[in-house]
Structure formats: C-alpha cells, structure tokens
Image (cartoon, rainbow, N blue to C red; front, side, top):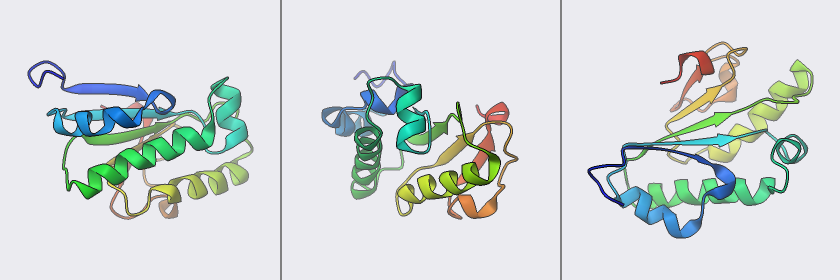
Length: 139
C-alpha cells in the first residue's frame, strides 16, 4: 500500500483477510474502521447473509492480536457495531457486554455504538481503556 495515499480504511469484518493484517499495520495507515452487524451469531448472520459470525470475530481478534504483538500504535482501530434486529433492551445489554469482552487485552481503540446508547453507558460494557461514543459522535 502506498503510504502517501491511504490514510483511512473502512472494512467489514467479514472481508478482513489474514494476509492483509501485517500490510495494513506496516503501511502507515492512520485509521481502520471495522463494522460488525450484531453481537451474536443469529443477529450477525441475519444482517450479513452468507457471513459467518465466528469467522469474522476470529479474524478481527487476530488482527488486533498481531497489532498488539507488534506493539503498533497505528492504525487507530475502531469497531462500529450495528444493532439491526436487536432483541429487547435487557437482552441487548447482556449481548453487548458479552461481545465486547472478546476484545479485553486487545488494542481496540474505540467502539462506536448506535446513538440510542449514551456514551459510556452502561459503563461496565467497555473495558476502562476504551472510548465509547454514539454513532452520532463518531468522526
């Protein structure tokens, strides 16, 4: 990748291939935004027909592990989660917490949730090191 041209990249987690990971990290990319359309298998696979929840989650976590292992500060990595077809609020909050626990100890810099969730609430949903913003506040 040409360091002078590509500074921001948005990817769907389902097209995030392992051979690209090191290239992305070493390319000089400033910002990587990944979209994930659901917190669990049923929600995700209804929204992304043909995609596999576990595969996409494993690939995103694999990228973040490599970024951590390389001690890379860039790209700034943002995860945007859609809540299309979400269950009732109590169940949604449980699913959200369980999903975000997948990223404990990994260098995920920011999580962007739908604007219906106030920034930082529920506070237990995010590890202390991450920033949570609503979609209406995202860059």
